[in-house]
Amino acid sequence: MGKFLESEKPKQIRFKALSDTISENAKVDGLFKGKPRPFCLPSEYAEENLFPPIRQAAMAFFANHNIAWHQGQNGKPSNHLCSSQVACVNFLFPFTDKPIELANLLRSVFPQIDHIIPVEDGLYVSFEWIGAENYLGERASKTGNRTRGANFTSADTIVMFEDRDKIRQAVLIEWKYTESYGGSYLGFSTSGTDRRKIYQHLFDDPDCIVDTDLLPGVDALYYEPFYQFMRQQFLAARMEDAHEMGADVVSLLHISPDANGDFKRITSPLLIGLGATSTGVWKRLVKDEGSFISVHAEDLFRWFETEEMQDWKSYMQARYTWLKHIPQTTNVG
Image (cartoon, rainbow, N blue to C red; front, top):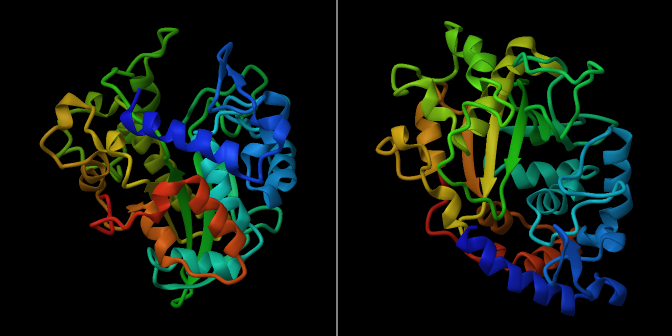
């Protein structure tokens, strides 16, 4: 368990106790993994884990698209106040119907944006994106269906824009909050499946997005977060090859707190020495410059100015207090 997660729990407990966005009935301890936890909401009030104006719309969107809430129950999000998925939805769902504000948010990363393009259901942000096709050759369920948010490679969100040169770009966004990873090797699943065989064809492709000459061996990537980086980067590359939704370019944007030092640790023994942080190592391993971009959430937040979304900004700063922090650098990669 990471130090950053442990430091966030008392802050979320305080937020729950003091915020008028949490009802009195929801301020008691909630059960999580069978035990009462002060940093959780009662499961029947789990929707209060979301920013109030988006609660019903976000749950309806997830239900309509059969998207799994991580550790959620009965169609509601996780009751854990330190949930990364909840933090992502709180940060980005308010922009689903605000293309001008979304463009302003992302221009610090993509200064060439001209305008934002709807992605799904007329919304400008969609969630748990797995691609239109099974590009990675992952195993489908017994019903043959693929699920968003569980059992398949997915990006937390996707956005699209057209730049000033009329080039259409899709951006897969991966959001981190309290994540930290150990050194467990993931080449084999708990059921014994050899995951390396599933993805080997992607490395065999002459146009492989990963620099296999620099990579000590594919086994080096079967440690989190590199295992996730690998799959999402391949997803972006295959979407680009297919021109999914008319995209000319598909890139992967990684957003994480600068405050979470646990996440920066290089977990793969074979990749130590290739960079100072996990995202820095991955950026070096990706061939095409600009295909992988990593930024601090604190930077995105402080660069973004809005009059229309002041209630959202106040909520986010009160709940995720590290967003007030100004990083010493503007890029974690």
